[in-house]
Image (cartoon, rainbow, N blue to C red; front, side):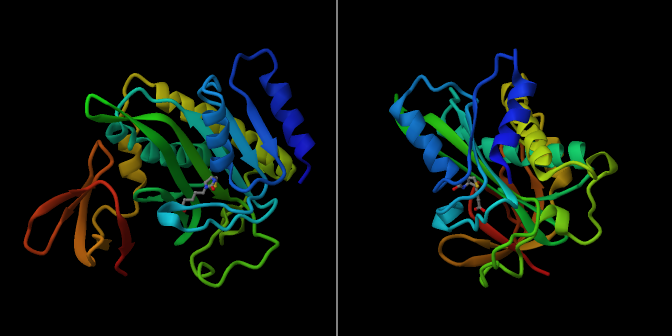
Length: 277
Ligand code: BTN
C-alpha cells in the first residue's frame, strides 16, 4: 500500500480543520507502544492524536497475547485519550471503541459486525477486530486516575499475504474476505488506500464524538444490540478456573450480567469468556 497516498488523502480532507494529528507509518513495533512513548516524553501531546501503521512487528493483544499484524491488509490504529474520570470509570472506553468500530463499519461499508464482550468484533464467527486500551495510573486521595489512555484498535480488512499462525487460523477473519461480504458499490472502484483513509478519518471522528458526548453511556444501547452474547451460555474464566453461566445482559458500566446455575446474578467487569456452542 502507498502510505504517501493515504497521507495525502487525509491531509487534503483535514486541511483548514483544527483537529489533532494523524501520524502514519509503514511499520512500527506496536502503535500502542509508540503512542505511549510519545505521551510520556511530551505531556503536551494533545488528546485525539492518532498513530496508524500498515504493519506491526510486535502487535499486542489483551492478557499479554500477541496480535498478528501482517502488512497492508489490516488497519492498526491507536488514539490518545486523557480522561479526567477514575481508572474504574475509564473502563467504559473499551466498549465505547467497540461501538465506534461497529458504527463506522456499518455506516461506511454496510457491514454489520457482532461485538463479543468485551473487546472483540466478529463476522461470520471469525474475529475481525481486537481492541486494547492501556494507560498509566496516578493515585489521588486513594483513587486511581489514568495519566493517559492509549486506545488501540486492529481491524482485519483483507486477506493477509502472510500465513496465518496455526493457533489462530480457525478464528482469524478479515471483513472483506468473509463469505457473502462485498464492498458496497461506492467503494467498488476505490483503492485500498482510499478505503483505509476513509476508515481512519471516520474512526477518529466517531471515537472523539462518543468520548465527548454529554450522555457518557448512551452508546451502551448499541453495544447491547450488537452483542453476540446476550441470551447465550458461556464459559467464564474466573482466574481460578472456568464456570458455565448464562449472559442475561450487559449493564451501563460495560459489565456482563450473568446468571449461574443456582440462579445467582453476577456482574463481571473483566475476564475472558468463550461461547458454549
Ligand atoms: C486483542 O485482540 O486482545 C486486542 C488486540 C488489539 C490490537 C491493536 S492493533 C493496534 C494496537 N497496537 C497494538 O499493539 N495492539 C493494538
